Image (tube, rainbow, N blue to C red; front, top):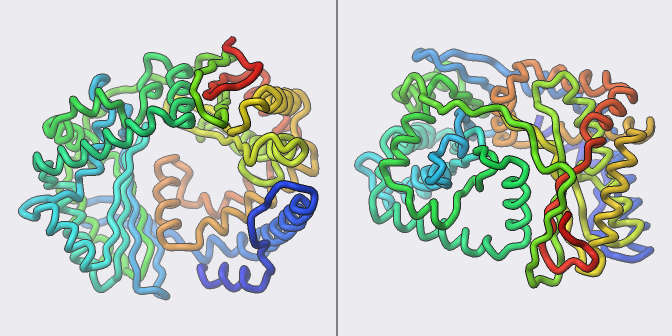
Length: 469
């Protein structure tokens, strides 16, 4: 599949360069968007129907009973493994925020009899990439290795997850790095706007706490706290795995059991209550002496399991889904030159869902920027997308999905996301049909449902003419 995608890309003229301000640049940008739209339409027409066959997913069961979604790719001697567990920062004790992020940063800092320096040297010597990330609801990891080094790679993965050392010197070194980063973020307008938005949207709920913790909470995290989280979260009952590469089912089963087979069978997750977003209609202005004002905005979203998720996804793409053709980008950036970029996206968690967007603009342009954003959101809520906008969104989202599966790591990551979201092993087969089945009335209904109630805004900077309400 990768070579198929790349051959198609090489036969087309991809728009180069970055758009700049001015009439001429907007003309070039428009031609670039036309080229991109044509490219994605071609991809949707030629590659998307072949995606399922090119990415044949097998569900295998290891001797220890662990389910693995496997895509065999003998064309490159590489192996990419992604995995995920239920349980992220929402599982931390309230006064120990950042503990699971800190734990993930320490898993490759020595394990078993292998000290931190030797562990890193073995990774480097084998050209092995190993990483861990913590979200609000999940803890995920990624391993990438040459086939010839797969045994060494899985042994290091086994050590990291089953026998991390949490040595005092490593704990304090990582703690110092995290604290330094948090201190820098404490003066970042983007970080302040984001932190305030989530605190206001979910007061008193784990989702309202910073995922990486605070300077004060990280200072309280101990090795014992991290060991307790490891035992509660890294367990086989919620484990999802995706493997892509030059490997057969029997070998994959042996290696997966080696790394994951000795993890605890069941976790002990703290129940997290479902929660509705708060703060709709509020605007919070925080004074900060910076040359640009940051605006974060958002409102109620839709869960991934909702039957109306796809209509909402298409509607939001038209509104501000990150493409150059979105209404927010066109109205804020192209027509008025108020900001370099603006976007909005759907975020779905296990116990809540929101749509969140953001931009940065001159202090003296903040009032106009907010008014344009609010007007476009209100217009979308009232009218929904046009038929032409919906058709273009469908083409883009089908084509861009194919482009998003152009490496083994991206495919294995998608396999895990599909499992965590309970989309089914045939989701890649069904995705284009799900998009095509969305009607204009569906998107208008979801626009009214999600956008008609208003938004929460957090504004950080020295905005002129903008006050808290």
